[in-house]
Length: 349
Image 1 (cartoon, rainbow, N blue to C red):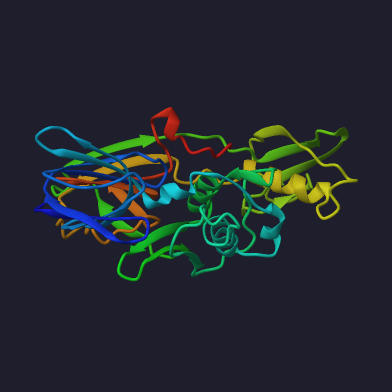
Image 2: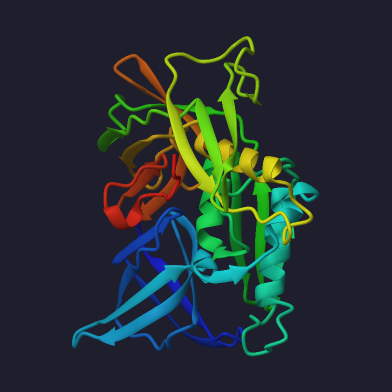
């Protein structure tokens, strides 16, 4: 795949060093935070620096976590820029009732890294922008404090929304671009000879179609919700289109009527029920390995969030691109399932 040009910039976007290498193992897994390893003849880098890599597989950007002298070479380790979202933050969950998911995420990111009253917390040149609007989105949390990264992963799997970080050292800017990827579904043939390796794993979830929600502070207050065949939710047990067999769950929410004036128990209960009845989409892990310059798959052009139909043995599997591993070849990672326990998406369904 030829040489890669590796450039290091400080947090203030000042040039620090550069080197070329053909020894790269770059991982961009949207659903995990794996370190990437790059072997270099000589490099100067500090923890927290930006790394910009250009080569046959495209442009790769990250944050340095370690740079170690191995004697005959240096080993640089980096995380994706998305890793800055792996923090617990405060947010107002009820603002999603009036805002799009993209605008809500942009607001949280800007409050965290652009407009924080703690100037040392802010990231130089940072701005979050949203390029689409998805209304009616819900997040699987009952609190106003939670993991921003978990919410971002949920936004991809449920609504096709991605947060793409773009580094521009010349303009001294780091932009978080938030949008729903409205790509048309493309088709890939897994049985063609250009697919060097392939792996298919499936997770079979039984998604609830009836959820009873109890108020943990007053168990005499409860509501039943039913999922219909058209994807809507109702409280009418006699409604046409109910799904059978009935797969049911009972769950709690906490609602204090005296303290929570802006949200009723019914609203909170429906939001909780919806998170359990969300369609179990992309319950697969499909990995296809191709050459970096493959003209049929074009791995360099494929973006995280791209919807894909993969054909194998005359069967079609609907999935979404969630990761890439770039090296001597490119491994494309599809779906929301990860085999390692630490990588399982917390979907709670």
